[in-house]
Image (cartoon, rainbow, N blue to C red; front, side, top):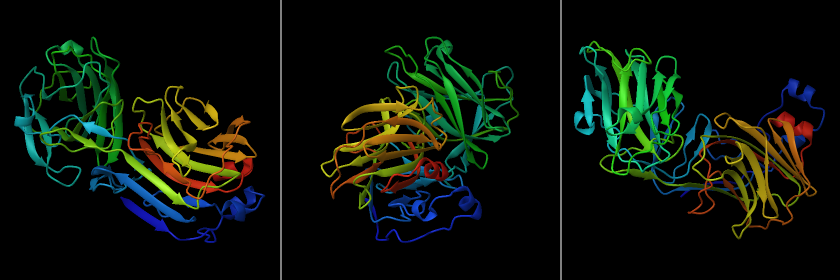
Length: 439
């Protein structure tokens, strides 16, 4: 278990407001600059203000992308901080074996492609490879992996790729024997775009997603379930293309595409890379508990910034839970995917409240909850969205704590896949102007 304690108090002022800020805001700057808890979550659990302890657990190793675009590994129970903040993920498994080994023995089939080995990988090793189309005329060129997925499963295939003379990479996924069933997504490795999507016969809708990792590397994702027959396995094709929509390509035995770190998951999006060898590997669920004198007793305001990759199939993904000492949720807020991508808030005395327009979860959401005299006010991007004439009726006790993003229990599935970027809690109700300014 990773643990960090902070013994600072609230008297520390870490920055002074600018003249422009002071001009815009007519109230007391000292008030808004003095939260009960201030955790930036940029590269550590250090608290600018607040007294307490952070306990982070994950019963497995894991990887993340550092600020330089390199893949890094951490041991069990070690947190991961990326450019977007604290990375929190529920459990997932990489179903593709030999995920870093692209030798001929670990491709099911390679056609009209040479495989150059010992290419520098994103993690600093030399386990990447370069797919180089040959000069064979009028031929399909690809490397092919054979994989077993459950019938009708929701699946995402991802791989890190970079341009090495060939601009486009097509990822195709479908039944083993039938070309027509393959869903296909083509990625532009120069401009970092999804340029072509095609859903194969009998396939669920296939979509693409690409993330820029820096240094010319892109995480390419094919998202979509494949409806296999019961007795057939599926295949994943990695196909270099000089023209995005042309399935045949004549190479020159030199130009190609560098590929790293392949992954297949039973999710509708890709999570952090999970290395495998001869067996599938599972990354464990993460829990992050903040204890100490940080949970207010009466009126209070919570401000948080976060993003989300998507849902693991559950209705909701928790971003923050305020817990009583007996482990009951007294307040929970987060993302709801079964309600058109809205945010939600609830406590143990009222039904869930859903609010906001359809959200782009991959972008940062700045949100605030104000609790004052039994009334809940909700804000997103500084705009007031909702007032509910119900509030928290139960007080917190000395053992109350916060659960950030991850599970409250070992079996909890309603967890965030995404980043937490900052958390501030005030033990008083901020007004509209103060909330807008702070967001």
